[in-house]
Length: 317
Image 1 (cartoon, rainbow, N blue to C red):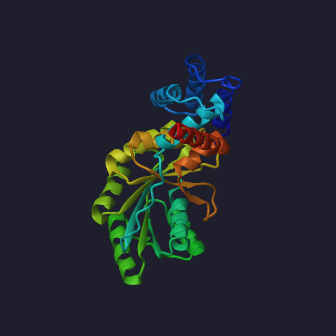
Image 2 (image 1 turned 30 degrees about the horizontal axis):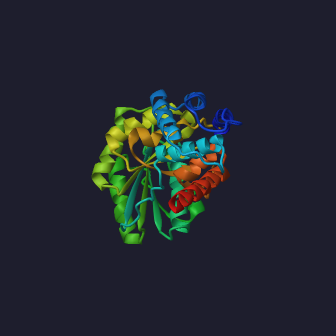
Image 3 (image 1 turned 60 degrees about the vertical axis):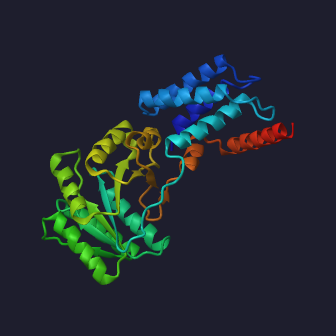
């Protein structure tokens, strides 16, 4: 994951190797390479430029630390800014209501149905909840079948109305079913299309208006890069979703979606999903993701300690 981006960023930091301190000249060269690496990873150019301008400003304002090299200091600055770009801190899913209604939206092929099953597994096993899966994709019997298999694997209830062609009434009926059967989470898997169209958007908007979900999670295939960001923006304009789920992060993804989707739609990434196994769902931690992209978590710890030591010495003086 992110192998190419990680290698390119490592190459940019090596430009500072052997330098005694950060200067305007060596920072400018490094920043240029970082910006190129981000654009090649499918990060929007204007976002990459704004990101690197901030890094340059912070790098030039940094105090000289004798315990760390300029390259290590730059890694720390980039890591902090990258984490901030992706939201800074993790955003937990809201499951305080009973039942909590969670609406799942996204394009066909993004991994919505698989994610619905994984979320049910996560909430059942890690949060000790009793989820109900709802098959509200009225166009694809295969989606209903898939969700049914997932419900069996997870060991949770499922609500299916195979003859009902009204997704709104299916969702409403499912909530009543949940109340009667002690399910405190309702996960509604909605229909997707191969591309955004008005019928799909209107249908999912109608479901939202009818059931007032506590969470609307937009599921997006991270491998589609900048297209994922554009799709998220279109969905957010219509649904005002509460969070993003990035799927297929185990694939050959260039990283653009993970880095810029939060910045573009101003909504947190709540989960990342990798693989088909039910347990391969993780809460999204921006700090950890930034460290993973940079592949240099130990260096950031070293710099933090050096900065702390420097501050303590300054205080003594």
